[in-house]
Image 1 (cartoon, one colour):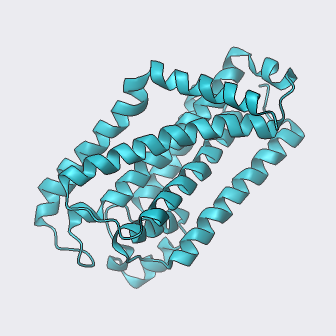
Image 2: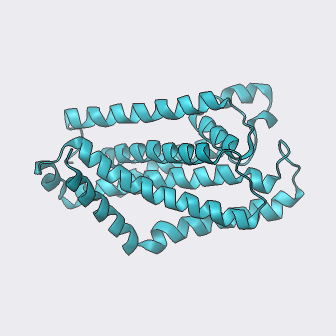
Length: 253
C-alpha cells in the first residue's frame, strides 16, 4: 500500500477545500441552520411531538443526513472529475499508484469534509433545539458509514459524468427527492399503510431511521435492517468502482 500517494491525494483535496472554505463548509451549514429556524422553530412550535420527541429535535438527524449525503456526493464527484476535465488523470494513472490507493485518497478526503460539516451542524443544532443522543458511538458509526457510502457513489458519478451538468443530475433528480421522501421531516409510520410499504423500497429510509435511532432510541425500521442496508449499499459501490477500473470505463474521457 502506497501511503505516500494516498497522503498526497488527500492533502491536495483538503487544501482545495480550504481555498474554497465558504463554498465548501459555510454554505451548507448556513443552509441547514435556516432549515432548523424555519421548520424547527417557526413550524415545529405548532407541530405535535413525534414518538415523544419535539418536532424541532426530530428533524435534526434527517437534516444532517440530507446535507452530509449531498456534500459527500459533491466532494467526491468533483474531486475525481477535475483531473479528467484538466487532463491530469493521465499523470495519476501512469504513476505507481493502484486504483485502490486512488479511491482511498479521494474518498477519504470527501468523507473528512462531510464528517466535519455533519458535526458542525450537530453542534449548531444543539444550541437551537433540545437534543439528546442515546447511542453516541452508533451515531458516529452510522454517520461515518453514510459518508463513506455516498462518497463512493460520488466517485462513481464523477467518473461517469462527461460534463459539470451531469454531475448534478443524480443528486438533484434522484438523491434529494429520495432523502425528502425517506422520512427526513416526518415518521413513515404517519403514512397510510400502503405508502409505508412503498416507502420501504427507498434505501434512504434505512439510513435516516438508523441515524434517528442513535439519537432517540426509536426508529421506523429495525436498526439491524438499517446497518445491513448501509453495508450492502457500500459494498455495491465498491464493486462498481472495481469494475470501472477493471474495464477502464470513462476513466480518461
